[in-house]
Length: 480
Image 1 (cartoon, rainbow, N blue to C red):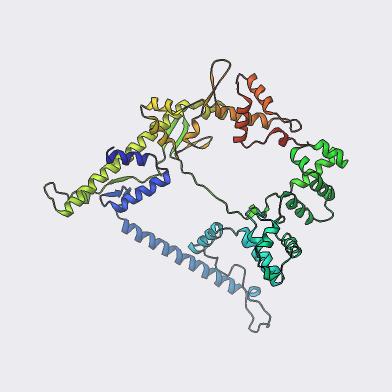
Image 2 (cartoon, one colour):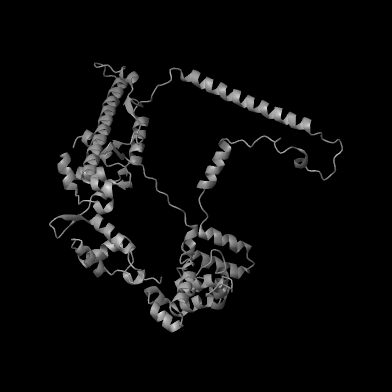
């Protein structure tokens, strides 16, 4: 492959953020490339001076208005000559006499920093509480070891025996001391930290509730003795063993559901992923239109000043340097244009094929593979794969990666085809509408889909259900 083709392929597979970095590197390294800015103002220096003078006039006028209001207020209220010792200035000055707090860069910066500052980790929170606790040196050493063995969810990832073995024999620490410090740490915030398993985590949280909490004792009994039945949804056996009525069990389960099985995750840092769409899809005049995002990359052009300095017959070092950079700049601009054209072609064909999805949603998604688009735009499948990876489309139904619109198909009884995406949407719809007392099994979902003309194996339904993070029927069973 030629260097030009290699560069075009490399730019084609870059995401939006990577492309912006690539463009910035090209601008920094190649003097023949520049950003094509819109020169709408003929005199930028004069415009800047006019803006500065306007700001100065506004500041002066604001100062004069404040002084005038302060003078009016002081003339209306006479301040006594002798003031009591405990007099506060706020009692004498009018409420409007102080100038308003400036809303400038300092305020906005501090607000931005407070909102974007890294959140405190669970370990830091536990260490802060440990510093406030009154413990002996030995107990503090044990507490530090237990905190170090606590993961981000608040659960211990080491047994107490392993923690005890980690200490030197000279310290003469016994298991009773480790257990006592563990119980002390389990009183820290958030409730349920430093626990060894799910059962202990939930029971510790129950212990910190007020004794007058309704059904507190029944919830403790269920967690102590019937946790396996609770996990499997065997509510009949729980009611038979605890002799609770259905309405009472419902209230007990409501109390248990208020507990947090992973309390440490409240201190986990939030990972925010920002997606910049490459193309916009909108419906205008009854037709779907596809447009490139104009903000994903700056408009570039050849620097005419440097280009005019290049001479044909000159083989000097400076002239050769400018000529080589001019050629690289032209290749780079051509590669960018080719990338945009290819992305536009592929996105347009996807919209044409998946028009029903844009109109009616996931259930109307049609089967689509890379080969179909490759034939439509007369390109290789590898090129289509590069274009659709890490490229995003903004539609009225949300932002989707271009690969989202590709899915395998399942044959229908009528001889047609149904997309796997549409089948997953149907499964989600059926589960959402099921009776919580009798949730649908995978076999039942298979039968319901077959009634709609979609023949899917039970194991395929189970696979789709797992990808949707829908638990099996025995775990979805609820008391209503």
